[in-house]
Amino acid sequence: MKVRTCSVAGMFYPRDPHHLEQLVAGYLKARPPIDGVKGIVSPHAGYPYSGAVAGEAFSTMDPEFSGTFVVVGPSHRGYLTCASAIPWETPVGIVDVDTAFVEELEIEVDEFSHQGEHSLEVQMPFIKYRFPRARVAPVMMGDQSLRSAADLAGRIGKARKRTGHEIRIVASSDFSHYVPEETARRDDLYAIEALEKLDTGEFYRRVEERGVSACGYGPIATLCLAGREMGASRAELLTYRTSGDVTGDLEEVVGYAAIAVM
Image (cartoon, rainbow, N blue to C red; front, side, top):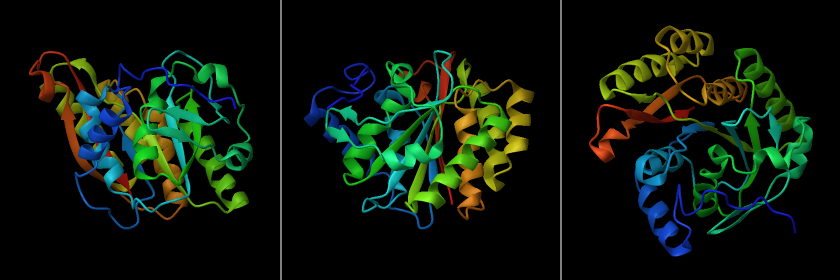
């Protein structure tokens, strides 16, 4: 069976299954589930830096969920928007792909482009550990314009209706990169504030205004737009942290946010 093999295990997260399970289990004790969550924003840095934030995001969803996670992450290597249709390997087991949902997205499937991309991979151990019966529909986003986000959100909505599958959406994104901690916190929270009412237009305006170097602003917008079609009306910031909280270096930090759309 052809699978998308781990590319950043041992770097972004532990390769040893027992160590990884212990780590993820600890992160997932952050909070009880919240009713009505349609999707989350989760960071994709190394687990020592952002794993606790990701755990807060994934903790909001009922571990009994057995539907499909549409995982949307940015392309860090300049590849075009594409889907994956093969199972994804993690150290704690294989995550099956919802091939029917992927087919209904009507997005090009390109397994080569997904090789080496960490933005989706780092979400998979959380999904496999907390939601062992769930499947995924992995989408790597190239063009992150608001127009492209609206197009992808529309495709997700159509695929959901055509398949009848229950879905949750994971938007994979870090926020400001390598700026002083004070700047990251001020600018990131300013941009995130626009998401409270799922105002993607204002979110893009604020990102541009402050030059916020969030790498997954397109996936975030896709989540908000698709979430609104699913009945969501607001987003809630669960936690915001920076790499400086771990390293103590406040001169050049990366920002991480856990956000629930409901």
